[in-house]
Image (cartoon, rainbow, N blue to C red; front, top):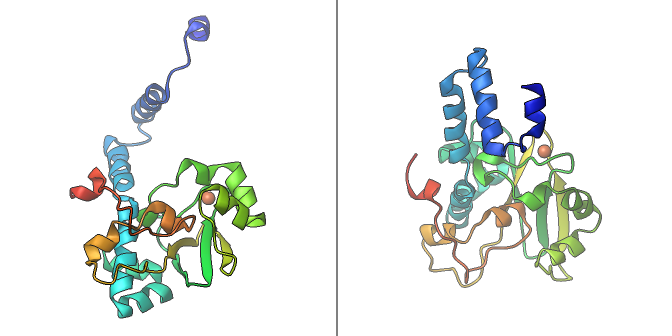
Length: 211
Ligand code: FE
């Protein structure tokens, strides 16, 4: 295997993942169900969960209060949470304050309600610069925060995960909760953009059908 191996092209991620999975199963280190269970967990981690929490908070003042005092429990009320979602803090945007989250050490977010982070969130550039020059970085991401609005950057830790509670956009007063959910994206939950009533997201397969 030694020499031959050196002449072979690098296996792609899928092939390597399959080989790793087989090796772990052969050695009895994991069961076949173990990976399936994690796959189901990953599939259940979508930003539509956070969007439901935001839309509920926009339309239900009591839920909003519960969300702001204990976001993990407020998520659990709607069936979201579990592993990696044990301690979540909701950051309330106002007309004068824009909250933005980062994990300066690696790439953590409140996975169960935001989903896995976008590529740029994991980049060294975002992680290092958003803390030092948030206004400029947000502008480079296409979000020009008005001068009068303060920006506060929150650094995730291994335990504390954040979600941004955006301001409900003007012009959505007559919208249903389901309509509101469609303008809350992963990026709005990170705080690098605000919900736009003129751009409604398509439902992803994971959220469109029960798993
Ligand atoms: Fe991290």
